[in-house]
Image 1: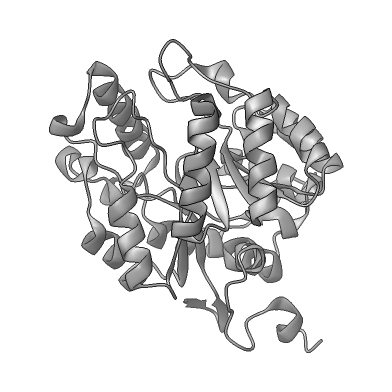
Image 2: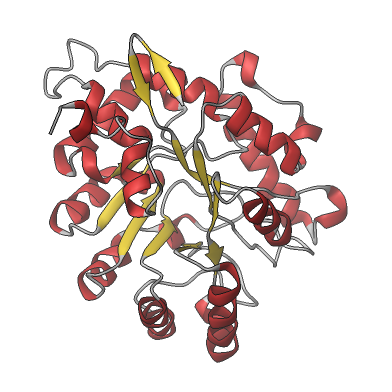
Length: 332
């Protein structure tokens, strides 16, 4: 929990990962290209004091994650959003067993979401049903630009993707997180286009579609979709560090999201371990829309409280201590 100026904030980091990008796990040159691109984001958008040595960035492990998030980072609960990337990494990029073991050890602090790929067709669908039971899944993370064989991406409205979404709906997996943001070398930029979110959000109205990275650099396209699809939400992973490197750009992002979506459909994410939550939480609580950007209303404490944790807590049925919900604060 974070406290500042007499206000308490319940923090849910809605997008974290444990990865292994060490040389011995890299299947080919693309594994190195991918993690190097991640490191460029980390190095170029972080305060100098928050930049990690490259070797530390390749693999963190569960002990450091617990320290960075819960001991030092103010986080009350975090949600794993893994990427498989088996075409680039021998044991996969996201470390399923290590992350799930941490979740079992700390169920009050961690939720494990899993990933699937519709190009595995029936075999993958059968695996999804087994994974849903084993992991007690409430959500999944999709990486539509991931490579498989000769394919360099898929769409949410592909026939097999529909079958997987139908299965998720049947099994009660209501939260679908989709990477629709900046490309990562060597993946293809257009495979992250947000257009296919529109159709599936219309077809699967009982499911939540959390567009991670809020569609950047296609923020306008995302906002036009989200304003007409009430089950589309914005994840702030990758957007958050611009609060340091490009504060006016961050003001534009958060201002547009609040205008089109309102504060109930925006979720804070550090995208750990690209960034750590501590400085992001501190900067966001202190942040205000510049006075000359008059097209946007000032940020309120209640809006910040919802974005930093209450929205994701509601989506995932995470218990919030008494007195910390906005309605309780208002005496409702």
